[in-house]
Image (cartoon, rainbow, N blue to C red):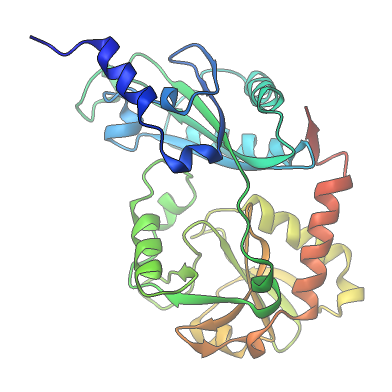
Length: 320
């Protein structure tokens, strides 16, 4: 006798998990609708996104009842899909509308949207031709920010033993994030806050989900090149904010470049920059002090300016 579908659904409903309280809502093109029940947040086991990591994703922030810089995330989603030869199931305008409707239903003042496009279900081999077509899944969860003291005292970074991704793959925000997971696991297992990876030549790349930024002794703001790191939407905006305030901040340049371990250790300021973090200062690398072990004035200014743009800039806000 096979177990009944009704029994499976009943067990899902009767076994709530504590972390479900952070899940506000879910959209599934496969199920064809919007759902608020966490147990409905499911993906078919034969979806290539699940068993092959064959898909792309984005994470966008909700701040004061509006998405922040949503279009940059959607454009990057489209570019990632293009690089792996996958068509998005809908236009950017249609996907934006789905995201807005999901946020409206969640009634969230703040949160994080996670948007996934998979190659779709249809089989278990690596052949994408067996799939039935791309699927879109979206979830909104509560915003969980780093403790406030981390922005004053800085975070503890670990130089990971996990190497940076191959440059071609680093430019795709794909569902295959095993290297990122292993970096984060190593970091947490050893009691650090955020990992940082480097390539075989010792050039620093990025964190598990964050870009790196330093202020050199010569007052240059430098971010590792996007040739071998993901082009972060937030760090790109922060670089533009730095350029707009270059004279006020006393910066001689705002640029992309190679950053090595010794450059980080000698930096006047250093930070991780990301969607959920904003501009989070780095106080140490493998317990060796970085940038005096505290937040510097330039990083503090840029984080404050970033939050101001989140709250007030109509060009960057998508309300719901």
